[in-house]
Length: 96
Image (cartoon, rainbow, N blue to C red):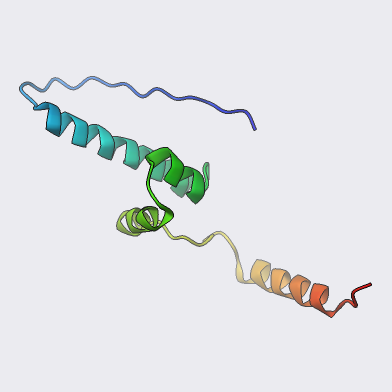
């Protein structure tokens, strides 16, 4: 897969913001962007954690706060049943 590097830049007309507050805001903006990519399925949870330089445990907490399910919500009951049946058939086959 081809890697893309994104540089996000926007301008806000705000005066007298301390460096500490600017840094915190930039960190939150980056997290929001990465979490939205994760929500859309564009990146994996592992990739999101790496991009944010946090543990998977910390990412799961951020996902919970953002209302992002760790499970694939697009899976229908029929799809799940088909996967279960496929797995059961694989277990029933004799090993050579």
